[in-house]
Length: 492
Image (cartoon, rainbow, N blue to C red):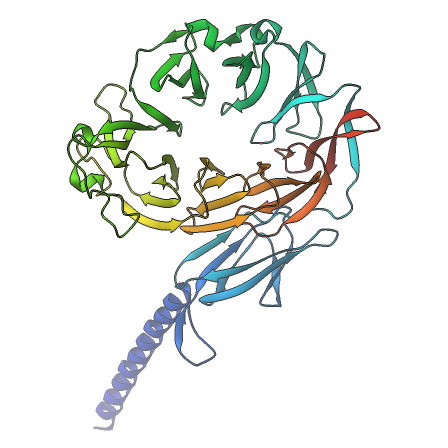
């Protein structure tokens, strides 16, 4: 009898122990799952989900302070952060500091990967010196090359500045350029070709320069006998060009030097992101506009008020190589309409500037079976301080910029956020990824894309660039009557 009773008690204890262990394991799994998802108990005793902050910097190894608390880990680092506003500060011995007010959201990853710290003690190192003035200095966007000519010299100079060691190539462009005066330079993606907008008397002419094989350079305008108002690279390799000629859209094939017929007429402007070509044309409402696709959600007033089938409109179109072009959106013809495209982290973005209204849509671009913006999500709609001159996409297509002189509006696809600010002058240019340059009174200042962390770096009246290896700041400056190219080491 006692033996049976002891056996039952032992069995009950085993069952209770297993139940308790199961409860403990389940509870531990639940707690660990919640912790992994960023949940914790806040100072008020409530369960709240945190966000994940990821911080990188150039150079790495910077001290991280969050809300005046120094973190044990240095950049590059990750940390769970309670939802809400926080002050982030980065510092490193011998460098300036960087700071920003950031907002963490529950369950979201916040990536701050663009902070750049500059050495405080920098020395100007003379790279080149010339008796005559440097003209047409142009840096490739990735900081790997510089192209310029010296007044009175028939040769152009191409500097390779991607690494610490600089190499130089002399280019004879006399045959292609003739007596033309260069006004603007545009680089292709691999920096082996440039397009030069030049002046010949009162006429614009376009020169395609092959930096690898200068003998293959040629005057695009004279080659085809057409008056091109705008020419850009259609492909990253630079083997095709897209042009605007008397408001006609045409494509040039470089190899073989052939120009297409008119692909679209009555075109105001175009934008090409390397895979998709969009343009703004002038039509009538009956030509393209569909009621559901025509309305741009930029005001509470109906854009179709007073519209009839013969009313002139502006329309954004997407070019199709072997099919009918696709209607995207339209507006009344008295509106200024601009468009830009980008694709960031697998998501496509379409930016429209309608006068001083800025609209950003996300989703698949309209196509032959799905015209108009109805299937795209309007993620931003804001008024700008002025009508932008141009829309630009940069920094791996994360940033979309609308600018009018010194007034900048920058859309960040990472945060779906727009920053607006006004700089000291209208001489604004890209210095490196996420970093803009501004020349004011002969001094170069740099600032983050969102207008923060403005810092004065050097004296120059020209543009500047950070080398591709992130070590050097290049610029030119006239000293004692001689024009010099300088560089300063900005990180050890």
